[in-house]
Image 1: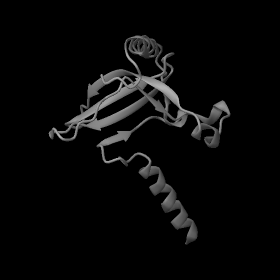
Image 2 (image 1 turned 120 degrees about the horizontal axis):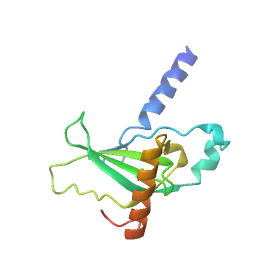
Image 3 (image 1 turned 180 degrees about the vertical axis):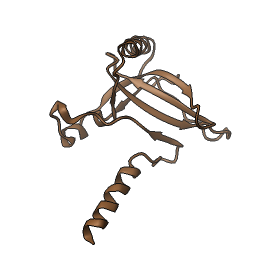
Image 4 (image 1 turned 60 degrees about the horizontal axis):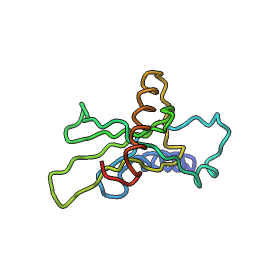
Length: 135
């Protein structure tokens, strides 16, 4: 019986990590990085990686959802954020040129053309903006 409760809590914990916890209508959805690089989660908790905005699109599946994709300067890793668009003027959230995220929240860009495009756009953004600049 205890193992069922533990399994249920573990499943809920995984779900909670993708739920909007700040009330801002945003969720983070990135592929988890492979642990093949030999780092453990305790080491990653103290580290962050700066990623730059490379793509902003509207969701095809959901109305009023904007998808923000941030990438590393080399274009090899990405971070995806979904944001609900609001119709109220009091709920203003700025999109910044860059964000710092945990390495465990970064996915790998497999497609070489997309990797090159992300690298070029990340470099352009880094040259044109400060990380906290609204874009």
